[in-house]
Amino acid sequence: MIDNHGRKINYLRVSLTDKCNLRCIYCMPEICPKLTEENPPQMKINDVIKIVNGASKLGIEKIRYTGGEPLIVKNIDRLIYETHKQAKIRDIAITTNGIFLEDAIYDLKISGLNKVNISLDTLKNDRYKKITRGGELNKVFKALEKCLSLGLKSVKINTVLLKGINDDEIIDFISLTKKYPIDVRFIELMPLGEGIKYYDKFFMTSKEVLERFPELIRERENEISTAELYKLKDSIGKVGFISPLSCKFCDSCNKIRLTSEGKMKPCLHSDEEIDIMTYLDNEEKLLDKIRYSIMEKPKEHHIEEVHKTNTHRMMFQIGG
Image (cartoon, rainbow, N blue to C red; front, side, top):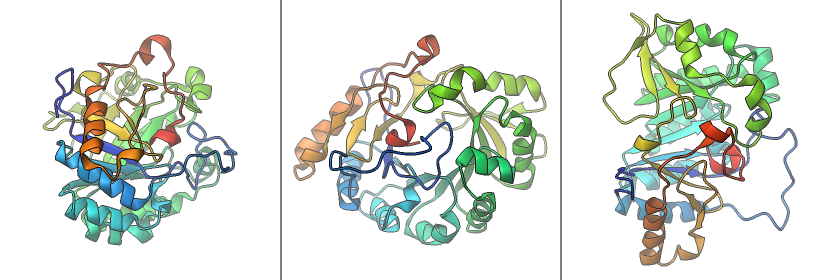
């Protein structure tokens, strides 16, 4: 579909849960509120399948499953299988912290998964435990190597830039592209949720990294991407920069989002949400609501001006 601003919207990010096995400092509170009867229920697998089927009829061609941590959701392999077979989606991805990925990736791949993004902000064991509040780095690297051995179409590492916390490791991340056929993508910290607490002190722009490493060579982009791509000479992987603040890409944004509660978010940084759960048994109305969500997508965000997002949600409640 084409939205009101002339953008082709063909990408849906689906958050399967707002739960996670880690507590990364800029993403989740150390102690999350306990579930109560007032907490809205999470979508079930069959709910997601209905929505994805509907979205595919409106031109959605790419699905990314996120969380929280999507691999804590039971039957995610069946969801990916149905996304591939029922909805005829050929571009299926997940974003994961990688802790459970080694054991899950084979079943996910044969179900139809072809792209994996692994969130990883440090290559140092002690620092990883501090940033994630308890994660085990070796599990992530075992998962990375398993993904590569299975020949997935795309394997990427997502690294949030945190000045004074992990910027001394930028060269180490870049060097991974000499060893592995992966994209390492540096992402600017956003003033959203827990990230607000870290933004003023730890925010770092992509431009600062590029100035520090002039040996990175700009790649010609041949597909729509939120990342600007670079490469080291003779490397087998690439380095990407996602700069939603210093160089926002709203004019080419092709995605909408679905929260784990079944609410469409036309924009990550907008407070607008459209509840579609009551329309799951009426395909015509469901398609109308998804269509409306696409047409309501705003032209742009303004966080670079006010240094604050408009959404009341935290990132783990929206989906990475």
